[in-house]
Length: 303
Image 1 (cartoon, rainbow, N blue to C red):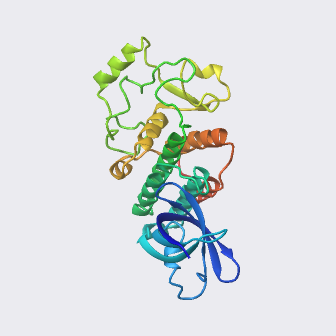
Image 2 (cartoon, one colour):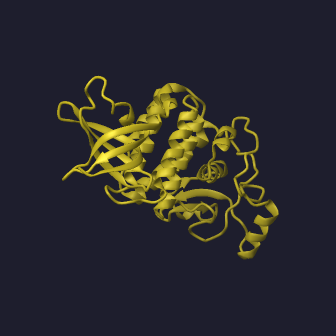
Image 3 (tube, rainbow, N blue to C red):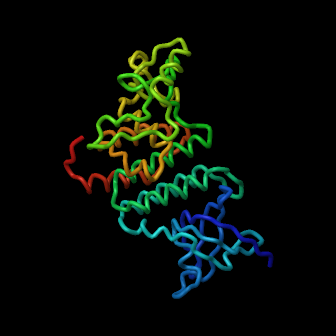
C-alpha cells in the first residue's frame, strides 16, 4: 500500500462507523484533504492527539481506492492555548470554517495555509484577549479574501475614485486609532510617511476624502461625498477604516498594541462579514456563536 507524508492543520473531524473518524485538514499547499483515521475512537489510540481539531501535525498517509487514511501522525504544534477559553475555541472554529470556504478538496490554494496557521497561533497566544481575537479574525478574513482576489478596497472611494485618508490628512500609518481604549500609537508595517502620502494624493489630481461608508455592491469604501448616493451602504468611520487596514497587515506585536474600542471592533466585523457573504454567496455559522459569547462576556458594555 503506497504511503506519503503531508503536514497539515486539522479543520474538523466527524464520526465514521463505530471506531473511526473522518478528518478534514488543509496541507501546506492549501489543499483540503479528507482522510480516514481508523480506530481513533478507541481508548489509547496513538492517532488521537494528532487529529484533534486545530492541531498542526505531520501525517503519514496510506493511499486508498476511494479514501486515503492515516497510518501515523506526529503533533507539530498542539496550539494548546486555544483550549484556554471557550471564546478562543469558538474563534478557532471560525478560522477553520473560513479555511474550508477558501480551499477545494484535492486542489491547492496557494497562500491559505500560512494565513490559517498564523491566525490560529495568534488566537492561541492570547486565549483570554477578546480584542486580539477580533483582530486575528479580521486578519484571516481579509487575507483570505485578498488571496481569492475578492478583498475589500479601502484605499480609495469605490464610487468616485478619490483617495481616502483619515481626518487631518496623511495615511493611517503611525496614527493612534480613534476610539481606542488608551492605545499607544500603532504603526502599520511598511507605512509611508505623511509627506509621501500627500504627494501620492496630489499625484492623482484629487483631494483626499474621508472614509465614511462601505458598499458591498462596489466592493469597498466610500467617501463622505458619495455615501448619500448609496443608501444600502454600511457606515465606515475613520476609526473602523484604520482598524481594517491595520488588521490586514497584522503581526503578533501589532495585535498586542492595538486596542480599539468594542464599537469599532463590532463595526469592523460587520463590514468584513457583509463583504464575505455578498462576494462568496454563503453565510458562516461561527460569527453568530461568537457574538453570543461576546454579549455574555460583557453584558451592558458601552458601545
